[in-house]
Every structure is written in structure tokens, then in C-alpha cells.
Length: 200
Image (cartoon, rainbow, N blue to C red; front, side, top):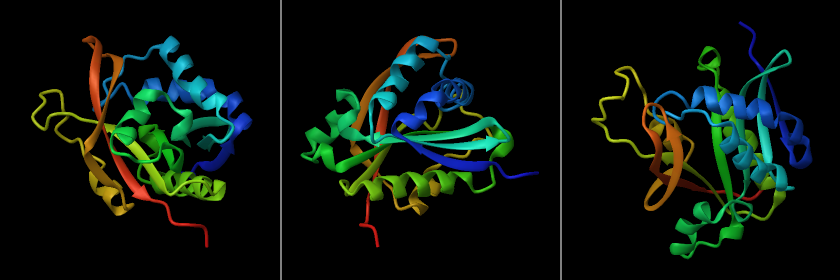
């Protein structure tokens, strides 16, 4: 099987790919642990934050001309206040943090090292900007005994730890989205952070 081609696009170059990323988010996040019942209006609003940021990045995986994976990021200062609040509460300078949004990849393409590529290229983008000393992302919190958890599900915690990220239990935000079979639900998401070393 051919490995997808991976490209990093920044700023205005992401504009043509907003719809592709929205479709991937709605497909991949429908599964555990997000259980997101896709909402086109929510997607448009959410992704416009990235479109407005001149320092945002999309890392896209292509099978020929089809986007099969996407990973996003932007300065935390360009994100909504809900994303910034846990850092403000901990006296962490928001303008020194580069925030990683989602990494979404269709199941067929998993297990080919693309997760590492997504992190490598987003970290390189943040490093090249030169203004950041911390990278961060947030992951939804789910109970270990939630009956909806698939028996064969493997959390990403081990992978994230290997990348040098540490979960910050005191840094949690609340976001609403439409959940499958449940309507709109308020979800806790806890941040993971990693110091960003300077470019060599």
C-alpha cells in the first residue's frame, strides 16, 4: 500500500482545504472517544479561527488528490478565550504557547508513522516562527468504565508520552458539541504540554 504524501501548509494556503478538514473531523471524531455528531455550522465556525490566523498550519496527508489525514495548529493567542483560560489561570504566557488542534486520520491509513509526521511538522512550524517555548494540545476526558468505550480501543497516552508531552491535570477546559445519540453535551478536555526547544 502506498504511503500518503504529507504536506505542511501555512496561513492563507490552508483556505482551499477547510472543507476537506471539516469532513475528516466529522468522520473520525464520530468514533470514540469524541462521539461527535458532525455539525457543518460548528465546523465552519471552528475552522474560521484557523483561516483568520496568519501563523496557522495544516499538515495534510494525501492519497493522490484526496485528503486522508489532517493535523492542525495555531498560536494559542489566536484561539478562543476558552482555550486560553487554563493557561491564564496558571500564569502561563498565552503568546508563548503554540496550540495543536486535532490530528485526524482515516483508519485505513493508520499504523504508517503519520502520527509522528504530524507532530514533527507542527513542532517544526512552531519552532520556525521563533516566538514560542511551549506546545500544547487538549484531549477529551472519558471515564475508564464508560460502557461506550470499545473493547479494542487503545488510548494515545503512551504515544503522547513518547513525544515528550505531559498531561496537566489542573489545566482543563469545557467545550460543547453535539454527541451521537445525546444531543449537545458539555465536555471536559485536559491539556498536555511540552517545552519547545529552540531551532538548532
